[in-house]
Amino acid sequence: EALQQNAALSQADLLADLDAMGVDGGANVRTNWLANAIVLDATPDQIAALEQREDVRVVELNETIQLDPYIQTVTPGKLATGDDEVSTWGLKATKALEARQTYAVDGTGVLVGILDTGYDNNHPLLNGKVASWKSFISDDQTDPMDDNGHGSHCAGTIGGSSGGAMEIGMAPGGKFVVGNIPSGSGGGSREGVMSGMA
Image (cartoon, rainbow, N blue to C red):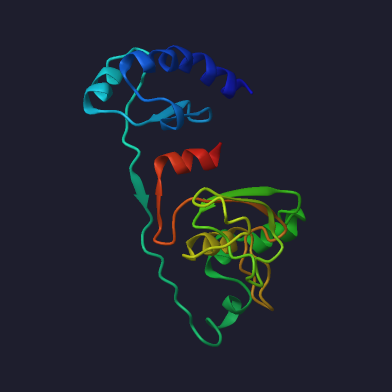
């Protein structure tokens, strides 16, 4: 609430001046309270004028943020010998299984937010873990999906269930609040990321 009030107060003068600056309002002006940002379409002259204002800290392009290519490697059979047969390298390196046992915690009752390429709710290690879902790409996509794989991979690392004898998730008892921002090609706008966080 404090962030929302701060954004409303600090953005008021600028929003009131946009018409006088010739910036087309309506759907072309969007506010974001979490980042205390205003997203708008503007000409180079209007951008220069915005940069001169004392109530504007920085002007940035609403550029596309591109994820590095996701490379999926599948190794048939056992991944390794010894302890690697029961847990992934990451769980071993962080001693996650020991922490779960020592402190009797596994993420139960915790909601984890993921802003990524989506979520494969049909994957057996991820099924049933989504508490809330929203696509910032398409209003028609009401069910969790991932047409890239990056988001599901990250979700599995964070809270994937045990795959048979293989543990893959740091906190498998947790649930997810998922925002699908990057497209299948792995690209999403700055505004999309900010909207997903708010």
